[in-house]
Image 1 (cartoon, rainbow, N blue to C red):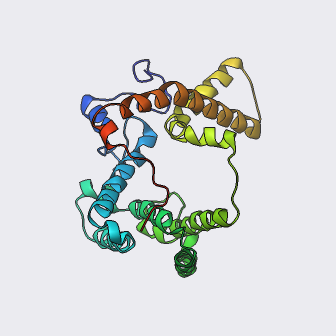
Image 2 (spheres, rainbow, N blue to C red):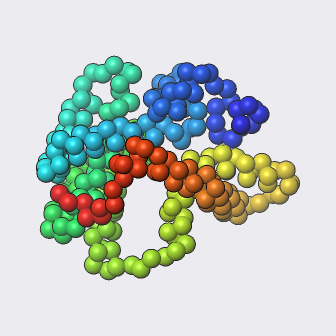
Length: 261
């Protein structure tokens, strides 16, 4: 709709059929400068997410009993391939180490119930962070270099795994508001850029001149409210409908939260 009405809401101002189809299928859409630029700008991370799902399919499907070793091996393979000369059309897959950061998250998920293994992993990650410490100032947190996975990625791994282990020792009861916001987080991820632009248009139309902090707060609140509405009216009903269809209904299983290794 934004494209048809020529509205600048964080999407492309114009798009061809190939670009639209590739965006919908999560195939990388390369911009003239070599970056990934699908119809919805933030969708570039979904390409990496789909790549991560492919990696996890291999790990879970072929190495179910040796997930820990399989993930470590896969990280090593990705690192070696990333250091090799690649076709530019494949470089997005392994370059930047983003896939390894996804794999670190899965590693935390299957290990956080084992405090000994978690402690060893946190110690190893902190050691890597210490080795990479001289490069931290040179590596932007949003950078695409593979070394980011060994610096900011490892640091994030320590925070996530450490927090998960701490929560097991100090259980926190459910907080309904945060649960609802968490449910709407994917919608927030998809809608936040257009939402910011839309709220900004409304503020400009109303002629309001606000300071930076107040403006940022209103933008954030507006994006969250729109995300919750999108989740309740579109995402949740659509997901429920799809889950009832074959073959999805046949493949559904109760969620296993134990993450057996």
